[in-house]
Amino acid sequence: MKLKCENCGNSWDYQGKSKWYLACPKCKNTININELTEKDRKR
Ligand SMILES: [Zn+2]
Image (tube, rainbow, N blue to C red; front, side):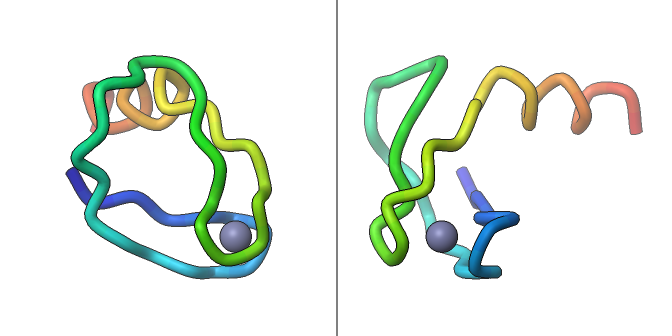
């Protein structure tokens, strides 16, 4: 799924297994995946 880091603006296609948190490959910012997918569902 496509993810975007709100810290540095980097976007990439994430194919890992984590459902909660991952680190941005660029700035190592921690991203809450669950929060992102929740937003998608409401849109
Ligand atoms: Zn980042």
